[in-house]
Amino acid sequence: MFFQTVGAIHNVETIAAGAGIREIGRLRRKHGDGRWRKLKGIALVRLEDGSLHKAEIHWYEAHGIGRREFKIKRFLDEER
Image (cartoon, rainbow, N blue to C red):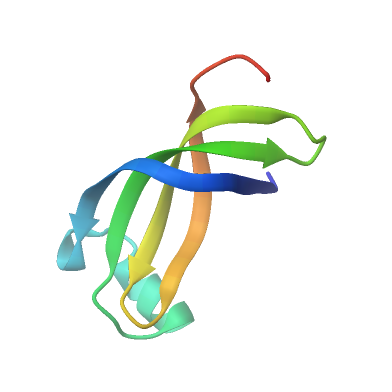
């Protein structure tokens, strides 16, 4: 599902880091070596159809590489 975050991501928490990430090998092969962390947060997202929703999103992040592979885990409210 294609989406864009609108504004800042709030309530950011680290879910896993380093060897605690199940997909660490794939991340390093695809994006490069780094101190990888899996994070989650709350953001307003715009879907392909233009609708806005508040959602919990997860992503991977490494210093010097940036944020990669965002995904929506669940929607938190009704359409805006």
